[in-house]
Length: 206
Length: 56
Image (cartoon, rainbow over all chains, first blue to last red; front, side, top):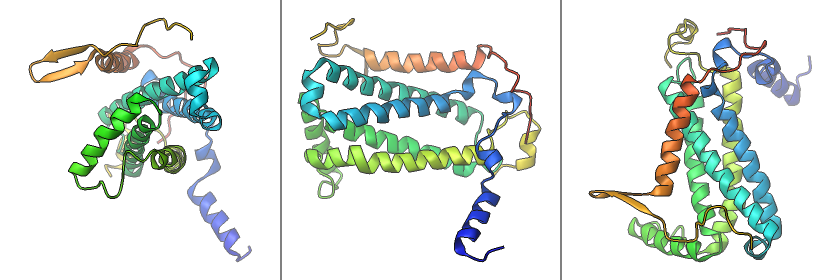
């Protein structure tokens, strides 16, 4: 067995994150319920969001404001956001009422919370870069809000360039990392069983 | 420009209850989420052959 750091990292990773856990072929019987589909529905909406966002980024505001295809892709981005948040909130409700942090799944719950907050911040910066009267009005109102809580020196909502960079690079990157982490944890720990299932006792409340 | 199926080019309609106010659009979204949540709990899920394993 090699003592190189690459070998050590590989063995430690495979020991902690087993391929059969990360890419399972079967799921527990209790997963056969509609309430369990909203996590993956959220991811599907996120994929549509990123895909339509990439097209909007490549073509630019003059395209999405004036052309028919631009209007269409802009609408796909909007409705993907609507579905993304609807699915995510229903997923949140479902996981809250089944106490999904049971069985040492606290990190899964917390990464989900962080993903939710990061999504809201990303959506807010999206409002700012529509480049229309709506975004101007929202930016001027948000500027007053930020100034009133004393953070205006750090974030200026009227700075469209800053909002664009946050919306298309930094925040999606952070959200992507946290979502991947969340999914890996779900795979590693398995889908949380129903509360009255005996399997929950084994993991304990942690 | 293509005409939309529903004309959204007007100020939002609001419903007010004393000091509380909510736009009809936001109210529809919230009620839809509640309806989806309740349906997801009670609608039968089509069972497949792969849903037999019960692991910890």
